[in-house]
Length: 161
Ligand SMILES: Cc1cc2nc3c(=O)[nH]c(=O)nc-3n(C[C@H](O)[C@H](O)[C@H](O)COP(=O)(O)O)c2cc1C
Image (cartoon, rainbow, N blue to C red; front, side, top):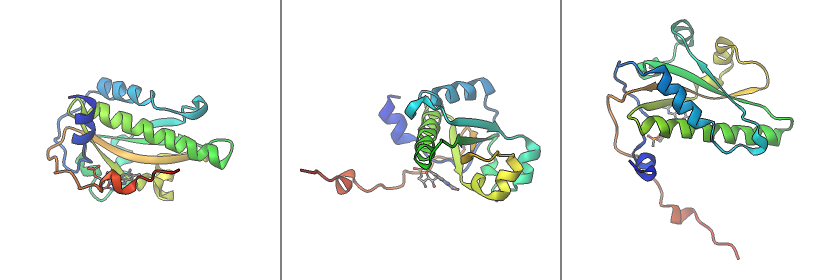
């Protein structure tokens, strides 16, 4: 697949096969994540692999769609609110690099916001000074839905003088 095919084919996956995903491949895709743009080379991302005990404690409503692997991506704060904002942007770029690298090898992700709640942060042991960008189920898709329709970008472009 070329890059546009990967981008256009990627979906947020809500049904996974139980097949294991190699830790080595996941680390490889996370390494691709680190090539994300990041202002001042802050490399603000951190990754927590979530084991069975922690996963059970999180008590997510769909158990992260029963994905075989679950991980959280954190983003370190900067010295100012603006740097924290930029770090979160960089960490989102990290996530999308990871998502696309995995997708190119047939592995999908489910993005959950649950990690941001105070309860989840406490369970994960997230230190002060970090945002949780998301918790991700990772696995081979059992079902890939049709794309959700997007508004044409021409409706969102302004040409300034
Ligand atoms: C910051 C962020 C948080 C998200 N949180 C959730 C979530 O909590 N639950 C969920 O089902 N999907 C979540 N998603 C995934 C979106 O719902 C999904 O990307 C969107 O519906 C478009 O579908 P697609 O990715 O398959 O194109 C999140 C996505 C982002 C970028």
